[in-house]
Image (cartoon, rainbow, N blue to C red):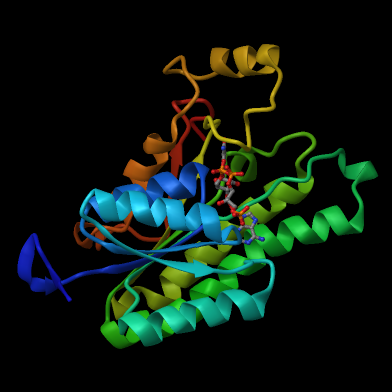
Length: 253
Ligand code: NDP
C-alpha cells in the first residue's frame, strides 16, 4: 500500500472506535479524506458499512471491524485482526463513549461500572494492543477523546467525568512511556457538540449552554475531527501528553 499523495510514504492505517455515527464518524471521514486507510469500529455493522461506502465513494480507503469496546476480548481481537490483515497500525482514536447520568448519591454500581469500562478501560486495552504494532513501526499517534466534563466536572456525571479525567492520566502516562519510540499520545476534549449524545437536551438548556460559549454556538462534529486530524498527522511529532480542549472557549481551563 502506498500513499497516493506521496508515492514513497506508506498509507497510514487509522483505527477509530465509535465510528458508526457522531464525532467518530466525522473523524473517520476526515482521516480518510487525508489519505489514511480507516478501520471503522463500533457495534452496529450496518451503520459502519454505510460510513465505509461513503468513504469509498469519495475515493478513500476503509474497512469495518465490529467490536464492543466494553468487552476487552472483543476490542483486542479486532485490533489484532487489523494488524494481521493490514500489516500495520499507525493511528488509534479511542472515541467510543456513553453516558449514564445521575446524581452521585443515587448512582448505581452498574451505571458507574459500565461508563468506566466503555469510556476508560476500553481505551487502555486498545492502546495496549495498538502500541505493540506502533513500536514495531517506530511510529504511532494515539488520540483519546475525553470531555470538558473530565476537566471541570459536571453535576450528574460523576461516572462520565471520572472516566474522562482518567483518560487524561492514561494518556500522559502513555506519552511518557512511548515518546522515545516515535509514538505520541494526546487527548482531545470536546465541549458541547451537536450529536445523538446531546440532541435530547431541552431547548432552554441548549440556549443556556450556548450563552456560556465564547464563539456563541454549539460545536459541530467537524470541529473535533479537525483537531484529531492535526494530532494524528505526521507533522504533530512534537505534540504529546497534551489535552486539546475544543469547546468554543466555554471552559478555558
Ligand atoms: P454518539 O452517542 O453519537 O456516538 C457514540 C459512538 O460510540 C457510536 O459510534 C457508538 O456505536 C459507539 N459506542 C458506544 N458504546 C459502544 C460500545 N460498547 N462498543 C463499541 N462502540 C460503542 O456520541 P458522540 O459522537 O457525541 O461522542 C463521541 C465521543 O465524544 C464520546 O467519547 C463522548 O463521550 C465524547 N464527547 C461528546 C460530546 C458531545 O457533546 N457530543 C462532548 C464531549 C465528549 P454503536 O452504538 O454502533 O456501538
